[in-house]
Length: 169
Image 1 (cartoon, rainbow, N blue to C red):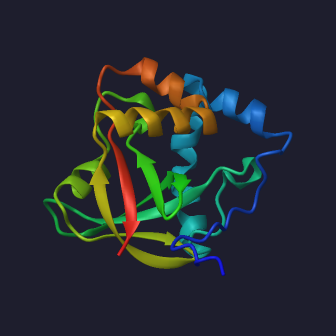
Image 2 (image 1 turned 120 degrees about the vertical axis):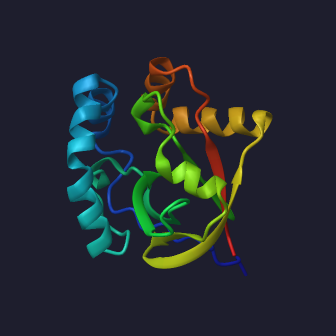
């Protein structure tokens, strides 16, 4: 008997989609990053309404989740759509911020140790662990293999992108 995955795979698109290659190439451009940022509110709305089951990135089979964190300063619940990489039983998220010069706020929230959960169909409480250098490099390579736009993001900033392992509690 195969153990049940703590995080379901609910992607509705396909990595084999004919749209994947041109859309990923577009996402690696400055206008592409701007378009994705502009679509973020609609994506957040769609992900919230579908409980993490549908995303505007669905047609390219991008594994997407909602990460809920507790604001380090405000204590307020914050929800962010993110791409993720899976190595059962855990998933990984990367604070790329489109290659911007600042770490995204959700990474500060995870570092502060507040409550966090992943919403993929169900809401699953998680423990977040910042990766050390050797594991970080390996998982970063997996993100680049999954969607090579991350290589472009690395070229846009000098900061060390934070990568977290999310483990179901």
